[in-house]
Picture 1 (tube, rainbow, N blue to C red):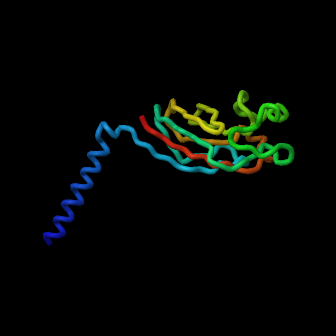
Picture 2: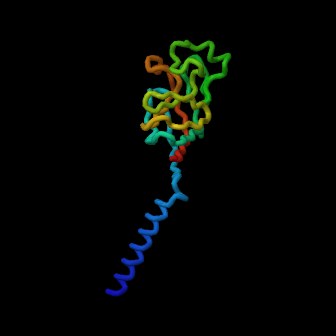
Length: 156
């Protein structure tokens, strides 16, 4: 019986120490990350990450290739097409018109961001991070491929 009480006491003490350590000002910033595949054939895709205002979101290309037209244009990374190729693609299909077709873009609620091959975003509002290729919904039928990104979030 004494052994069980000692074990329970130590477990409670250890758990309490973890709770206190987690609440200390020195650890006010927490980090978490994940890896996610994003398809060029689908619209906005949830990245499985919820952010609060002020959170810093780092998104980094980790592999894979995609295309906005598998019959006419090459497969590219999440950086998208070079300018000389981008100009040959129907411009009305872009969601973010100042950024190349095939580049990765992000959104949190109504705020849009260019990601490309990497981005560091400070969330302006709370919401779920969503990712996609810079190609409008009506233009996805000829897309192909997917890219993998690594997402890291540090809260404020």
